[in-house]
Length: 574
Image (cartoon, rainbow, N blue to C red; front, top):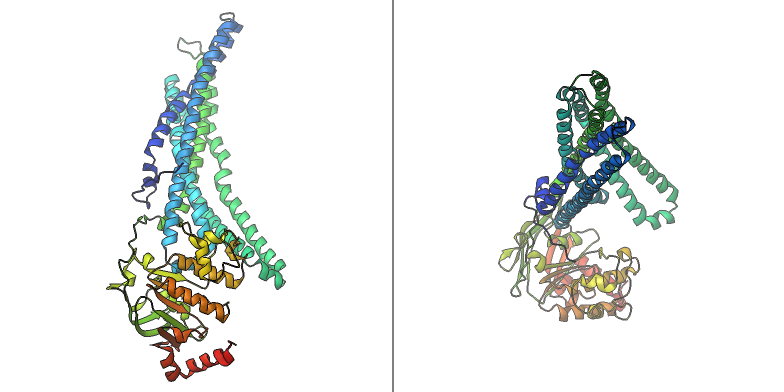
């Protein structure tokens, strides 16, 4: 069954998630009111049963009267517990819906954030926000929603019963519960500090876990297993200590709250006993005394739960502060594809890192559909950074225009204009076909043929987590097959031929020309054997990018010429 997505008008406000669940909340309200109002029947029947027992001993009632009263009591309890079942079920459905809505919005926000912004946060902290913090928020909302009925309605019912029985004694009895609330409020600072420290430690533990698993082979090869295990144990110990400390403020104070509210029992027993023994016409019966005492002890239990709820809400606030910046509505847009092949024009392009370091400047060139532009230079010259500029994840200076519009301004359309294959193929655990198609309908084997892997792999071959089941060259070509499957008007290919021989490289290049004849290809490579066949070459040297052709660069750039001759000497790459 497909779940319908609910529209959250303002995800930055918790109440927006609550309001989106009005139908299920209506069921919560009805069943919760019936259940909690019916709970006052329990003290009443306990009093009546006590009185019935006294009357039977006194010879005024018979066992059949007790059985009749007991059956009525059981019937009422069955009705009340049925309402409780539906209330708990509807509250759980409500909480699950809110959890799903929060995680869907947070997930969309994370996947639309620029790569540079995501890289600033540790993966462990992102995981903590996306899973633990959302769960804590939803649990706080669930408890609050539950306690509106389990405490709010029930407390009103209990207080009403106490006042009806004896309003003076009721006032005396209700002095101490507010003291528990005040104490809970005073614990706010400690609860929030310990909760924040716990979240931070959880993020560090998640990060350490990812590092330990992802780099397990490296640590093993260099004999660092034991050292890394000790570091991980330290993270685990810190997480455990802060988790205990965080839970301590919430759970250990529960008995204290309960004891404070139960102080009133002393007054109830004292004054209640005097009332029964007074012999006055309006003196209490055993039933009234039992009802009052039972009603108050249940009220005391609920009061201490309310104090505990205050602490849970405070923990929820800590988590909400962490995830609130990510709670944004990302519109579900229909992304238009370019209506016709268009020219790519780059004018006076430069890129500066956030620390002010300039990587390259004053780059200008233009390209038509069907052209392949080679980009090369020394190691760490900025080739990959230049390729990522077209993703517009980082601000650039100058202009990149596709057709008649600036690329950075094409927020939605850019995803249908620019394709990208980076150094990291970003392969996921699944089959080769799943990694190529990404859910689209097509024949994955056709794209394996384009990258000359149809004899090595099938669409059903396993990839392994992160591509661990494939060689480095296979990972690169599989990422290239995925890029060609999702063809775009401009495709940036970062070193797709790094692990193939010259014959295979040329065959794949020919396939790209045929398949992407209406696309502009920006081919980043450190291997230059195919560069004579490319329409343009961008040579990066000392922060300057020269846009030319292979033949012109062979004449004008001594370093480019030396690099090409060294790689192609004797007809083989060195």
